[in-house]
Length: 483
Image (cartoon, rainbow, N blue to C red; front, side, top):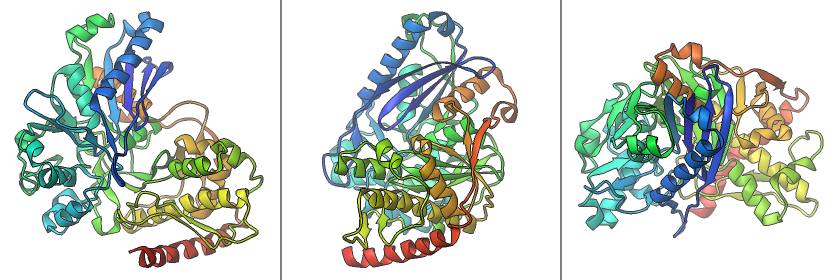
């Protein structure tokens, strides 16, 4: 048996699979966050441990014989979070999360130093880890003076599970401290933020052993001693492992809290000026590119709260796919990453009229997210990636209407997997299997069986292309009106 633990923004999921990669069991525990100020987003790392305890307790209670056969654990987690530890390995403050944009000035300052794009292969985004530490240095100097280790969220969970400070390449690539081509920490980038290699965890590949479960935890849950913990992956790379997106030409679109267009690469293809993320993959000698928007289902959930209608009910009333109307939605509720790298921009409805009803605004929200994903697709293409079809993943992919919008806006077919969970927890479990068995990664990380393919609506492709051009023109106008 192999266990994947995925530390998400809103909860932790544990998935148990067998040698044949059949899902045996799955448990979840919720996690709350806080937004103490505009643009801030924090979580208490102790809540991650509590959620993990809850999931492990439940799995051990309900599936004792299967858990007794556990051989490997894989970890996945939300990326970029600054988990700052003192000499006693206890957090010095709440984790500054991936969707926290308070360090936008520090990010711009670091990004102006050419070594960051040269060595990390990426723009220094406000959500990345390095500018957050500079913010702490500037605003909480008494805390910065006590920093002994900086860990990413899933690696803090690893510290509790194993007692070791270890990370891996895919997650670490999103810190702005990794030399992504060399797959190693950069002493120069660390020095530019007042840190050294001693502040960082050691590095392994995602499919390699990255610690073993502490004996006291094995005893607590009646598990075998010496269970290996894989290096694991950041959540998007873990989802790619789960979806079998590991070779050049393979890609997926993710409709989670954030939105992602992800493409696997056999070589390192940075183009930071495009605002595309060029990161290490979770497998050795593999890289990936991805464009990220900050509000995908988050945008629909926001609209759901405003209307008081559940997201599934909003999309269910839409009927057949329609051409976009005049109304536009720009989903920049908390800033945007790809392609704008703009922490200050905020969302908007444009061209509202008396004739717009709830369904019209729902369609505008779905279309706005889709057009933002088209921005990402075009950015990946400009960075040298060729994509001719994509898999769909994430909670938003349960809406056939939304997938029809995305397929038509992108003019690409979207493959929908058969029922099953092929996301980050499954990918983490696969990495646990690889670390425990040493099997060939490409034989393990195969793609899911496809249930259906959503083809672009050829009759509506021109209308969506026209609406996308209006969407593109709206960003600079909105920026000019709000800056």
